Image (tube, rainbow, N blue to C red; front, side, top):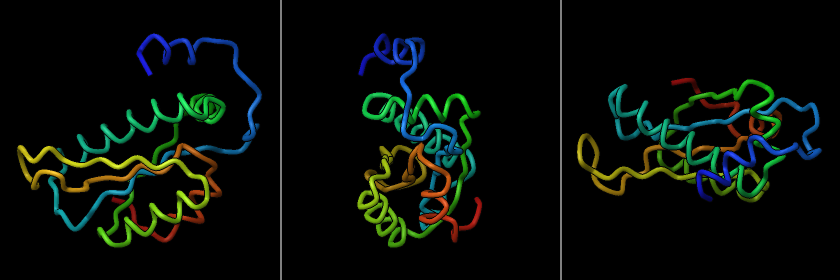
Amino acid sequence: MGLRSFIHRLTAPKMQGRLDNDPVKLVLVINNDLKMGKGKIAAQVGHASVTATLKIGEYQPTILDAWLKTGQKKVCLKSGYDELIELESKAQNHGIQTVRISDAGKTQVPSGSLTVIAFGPDSEDKLQDLTGHLKLV
């Protein structure tokens, strides 16, 4: 989706959605096995947030609208690689959007390393059921 289309989705009259008044959030789960520095984590989480926002705007604009109207809540959690892959599979089976971020390998981690997976934005309840056991970064 181009920038023009994205801006149009933000400013066009809003559709009534399936979430109505349900709280919505974006969960970003960092691959803790990589032992990235704070700056690297921040950059990877930024990539995941932007990509998840653009993707949800294209495919499920009502969820984007609900998330934007409720303050764009974001939570950063940590997990090991194996559990991260398992969570991604469970999320996809429950219709939760996922976005994988892999590193280019120019600084701290090898090229192609899975650094973050974004879950959502989606209903807080659905995401809590999926990731509620994980620890904050």
